[in-house]
Length: 283
Image (spheres, rainbow, N blue to C red):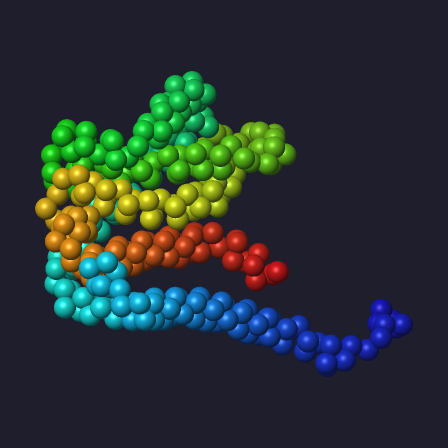
């Protein structure tokens, strides 16, 4: 007689949870498409306004080209742009990887060794205060005009943001969870693997998104100082020759590379933290 006194469950009430999830997914999809539409519409509107200003005020192309001229240059100079994109991309990726690996290793050392933190952290802050434009010639003099100084500059410019965020993420653990791990006699490795590392991932990926664009900037700055290839070199050459459409086309390619790396880090973050996707679906 366990079912006596309970109201009958209607088929409509049973079916509601099954239809709620697809409806929620559909609403999220519609919201995403609206956001993309607004972003694309704004971008197209800015380009249209730019084109109108150039045409109405008859701005010379050596001062500022129109978007149509930039697009034409991207098509006619695609060989030159592609040739100079590969060195910059290689320098950016290598510098990004090297700088972040060293920063993550140093942050782990900070959490587990206070002496190491107190000795290294002030040096890292001091190096960060130095202008990258001032450091670049020194690195070029020390390492030559090849890939090495550009990779070093890209690594240096990405090192500090990742170091600070990663150190904060590893240290900002819940004290009750940390005490529980100690009560369970967890080793230092187990505390790091199951508590500190998962907790630090949001901090890490926030820094990696910043570092992904900063690494490209560092590589381009290094190419300004001393190089005969790369997007930085092409910017200097186009500026010296008053080839403004090529200058804008080069900056467009550099911006596209930065956006590509930024979005790649975002995709990796999406798959590296599946529990955040679960929380988002539940909300």
